[in-house]
Amino acid sequence: MTPAPAPEVLQAPLVVEFPFTRSLGPVQSAFLTGLRERTVLGVRTSDGRVLVPPVEYDPATADELRDLVQVAPTGTVTTWAWNPSPRRGQPLSTPFAWALVRLDGADTALLHALDASGPEAVRTGMRVRIRWAEEREGAITDIACFEPYDGQDTHEPGPHDGAFADPVTGIVAPARLDYTYAPGRAQSRYLAALAGHKTVGERCPSCRKVYVPPRGACPTCGVATDEQVEVGPGATVTTFCIVNIKARNLDIDVPYVYAHIALDGADLALHGRIGGIPYDQVRMGLRVTPVWTEGGRYPDHYRPTGEPDADYDTYKELL
Image (tube, rainbow, N blue to C red; front, side, top):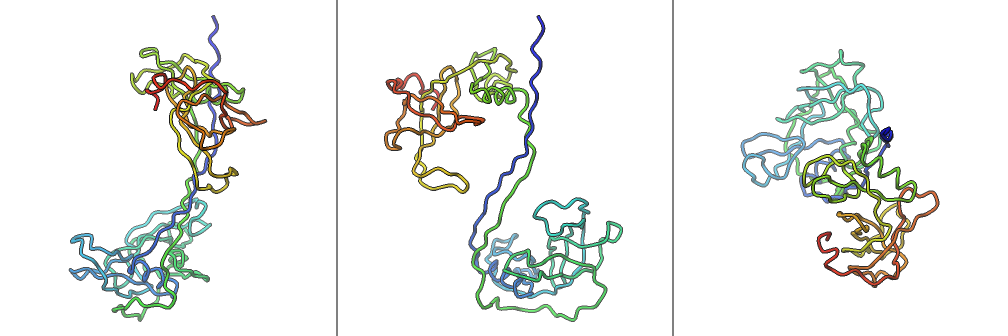
């Protein structure tokens, strides 16, 4: 008997992205507002060290810190690494060095980009200065980068009250992760079946449980799984939540229901949206079936079948 050909292992570029919003305490507020005004502030600890970037609590004693110090826009590279291929969102679009720079008047180093012609132009101990961004808003990006500097700076570090007009009190930091996802043999088969409006899992040869989506191995027994089993399309809602906050880029009116759904024949519940029924009528044990849209790669949602609700004992292990 000729064995079935191995499935094509799929790959796809994926992006995880969200805005992270945070409020600022008095020290971070002064630091970022200062950058907007081309002023770099650090904070002095109880033992006399000046920390840049500043923190609100002493890392050694946990004492609250409020003694702000203005430091110079010039400094010394303490260590560095060359970045030959800048990525999206990095400070410079041309190759540059990531450098730790100890600004004059500070006792710690600040990580930022150093604009240099090549790695041969960078060295530990070289003198640099801040290149300010043309438009500044109160963010670390107000420092466009560092650049080599051979001159003498006359700025004398000293105390600063941290007072600025229109202080920055909060920031929104975009978080983004770009990566290539390769699902592997088991999930490649699973995704190929979904393209044909079928759902397949894999059965453990030891405990005989059927896992959907398949992982390629049983998480309980630790043995490889290879036997494919078609499950569903009937399914049971095991538990659910009502979503009242509309997500960005998701064209679904709220409120709606997102549920754990146990497909008939599967020993693991998966996630899905419930449609075709008012949100306040969704319940544990509700019998549902998938609804596919034209060209859809996976069920758009699950709708009630009209069958009697499943008995609790039939799905209690899948909650």
